[in-house]
Image: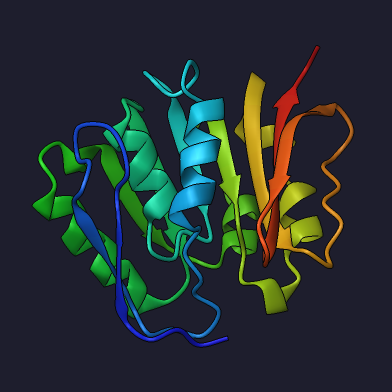
Length: 186
């Protein structure tokens, strides 16, 4: 699915109301405001001080929203060079945006690279037609903290199945997507 260029807004925290550009790129489908509001309500006690990994960053809405709400740092991984440049530009415009690191890489290949530390929160929201959930989820254990949180977004037709050791915390759906938040450990 190709989406017309536009913008999404950060909905909470210190950057509330700021707009992020959304490039016209194949498969780019930002998480809706309503879904992000729900997700960050669920994560409210976890985000302050967290290290966040936003795989398949796209518009960066999830990673930047986490930073806006107090995450210590966010690593945004995006394959498309034009989209990466837009993410870097957005980070330079935001006060404190240096807490965002943008890496141009295929997310699955990135997960096979040497670790860049462990993350407290991971967002997995790949382009729906690429069917990359299993490949991404199968590589996450090495990248996540002992009691990490994992957010997964998929089409309504796709079953979301995290690796062993993750338990469902909350889930929801919109007319087009299903989303779930998992917790690692007990």
